[in-house]
Image (cartoon, rainbow, N blue to C red; front, side):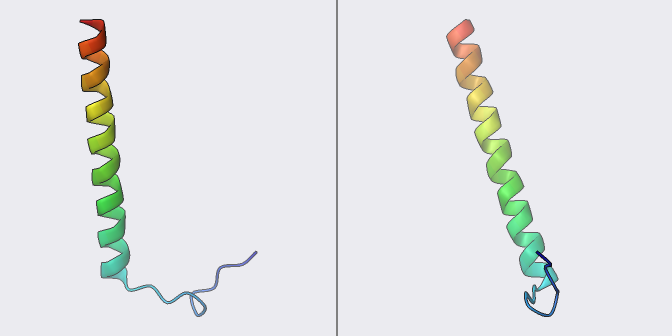
Length: 42
């Protein structure tokens, strides 16, 4: 399967925004998970 840029036109700003939102969400989930884990251990 080939992903050509002509088939999927992405705006760099939009793509960057989505990536940053995803990374922020992942960081939020990880921090919440560690907080719950430390509470369970402590």
